[in-house]
Length: 172
Length: 142
Image 1 (cartoon, rainbow over the protein chains, first blue to last red):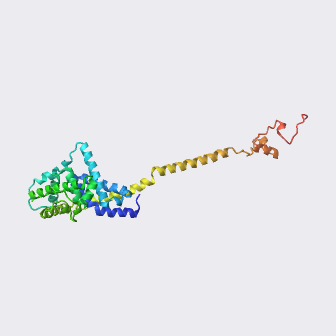
Image 2 (cartoon, chains in turn green, yellow; image 1 turned 90 degrees about the horizontal axis):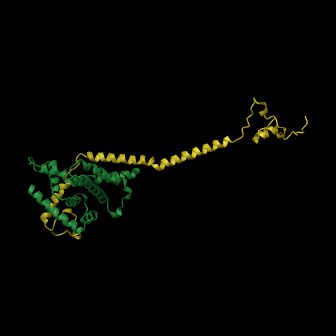
Image 3 (cartoon, rainbow over the protein chains, first blue to last red; image 1 turned 180 degrees about the vertical axis):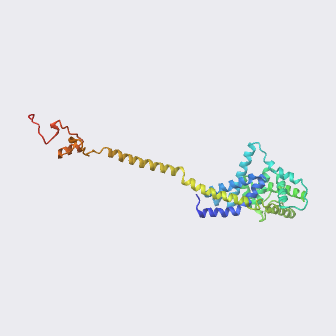
């Protein structure tokens, strides 16, 4: 059981990082109720293993995003085992993209458009670009987390941003 | 496509995803800003729900710790030790000689010191056998 001070410290970490972790999860798996469950699992694991955090191996954000990434990958592997196609989670976003924009982009429409853009990327591109967007890690740190080489991460990110630029150029 | 060189990574993330083209960098900054501005949990309801669950989890962890198998084993061993001590004490008491006089049986009442000693030594006096009374010499003559 954590002491009060430790729990308060964790609460501060939670307040600081929740939004970005949740956004990362949503962008990886789509706008679905599962995102909430996964976010809860990430912070439950972080709370349970708070004593295992080693500052020498990276900052808190890297540690949390590492847990989140593992949880998402585990969820996606389980989904695949159950003959469930994860990209279907984005189907709603892809369908909504076809609808005409009537009176500017509302918050929901903006979200739908961005999620539809992410749905066109493959799993690795979506993983790296969302890590880049939300974790504030540099390419070296992303490479360390993902197990790819730093140059490979840079190449994939450049290619992915090029795709997104084209998508938004077509839309806009 | 030119891979990104870490040694030249600028502070802005877009510069690490675009090439040297300034237009691309500005475009990337706009795209990244759009993504970062999305509020996936605008009301903060999900955040609050998970926060409450985490607080509950911490409490459950405490209760689990309190009633964990180690504590339960300790309590069980303590109970067994106490039971064994009480049982042993009770068994020991049961072997004490019962020197309570039976007031209804005349012959069981220790009226002399010898008779009392016989009872304390758990030797029941045989009133029909004079040899069992050390203070009386049986001569064989009445």
